Image 1: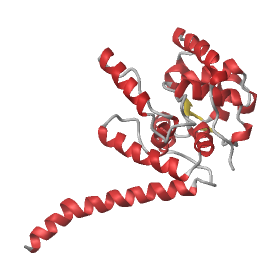
Image 2: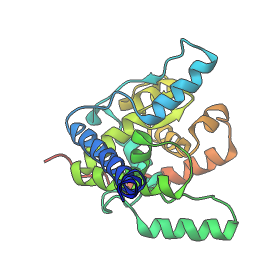
Image 3: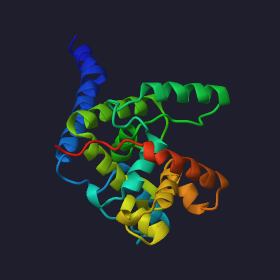
Length: 235
């Protein structure tokens, strides 16, 4: 009987306790980020590790920039391109997910994600790029934590500063410097639209800046930008 209790502990109780501890870690970390800026993310650490396999002295291009010093052109472009309902949903846009699922079923492969800005941030901060139901479930949990603990503007501010924009390029300031030799505040409408379109495949478009799709999609986002709703300012 004693050995059975031990077996149940190792098989059931301990794994559940570890999962709960992990969720508690995520919760506390996000709470800390209410008024402290992340210095790195899971995606940053993974990318830096890959870069240092080729160059031990490699460094990421990354510099935190306050929300007010990031061009509204870029904010509107990203919302228009990535998550038009960002200001309204609770972290997950179920309608967008359903449309993405139907599109993928029709094509027979993954061509649309349906992830919101908050979901993308959850993945970038803590997870990896692998595709699995377990990882997606964890992403959902972190997404709701972000929406519970942070307001929309803070979520967007962190996203703008940590999202990947190229090979070793993270955040709006680094992207503006890398592609246009300007600041995040100085990005024009067309520049912002182009950067927004790059987000789903930043390293690919960093290498293929003359892509016909990139140019066509940039024009579409330019036309949609004025209708994009920015999150309300901090109270």
